[in-house]
Image 1 (cartoon, rainbow, N blue to C red):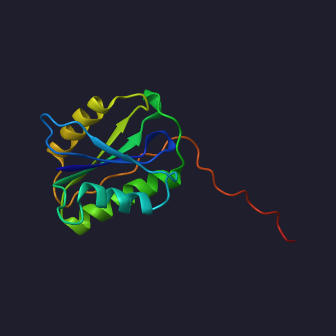
Image 2: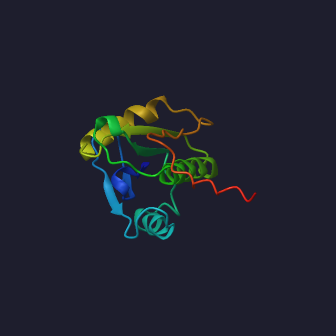
Length: 143
């Protein structure tokens, strides 16, 4: 079983794939947008992940060059940190995939299966940032 964390298009989706060769992704969409751990906890319960851990984790990040919407750097950090933390806790490999927003689940499954076939235990998913950072504006000098 593979856990998929999809953070494209400003909505978090959590899914599982039973087998790469033939299984479609079973999805659970996060009702509050990205940033809440409650939807992830509900996904764990719905998919039975508290009793049986996945063998792999894949985090899907947006690829703006392929038509995905821009998501904040904080969202990217949250996605990668969550995937890496779960992989560390469960001692399973983790991989990252970049896809455009309009890619179908079949393309995501194929890319995810390809990525986890190359993933090794102890490797970490890496964030991919695009665009300019949105850092707070500097304050005027006091003097």
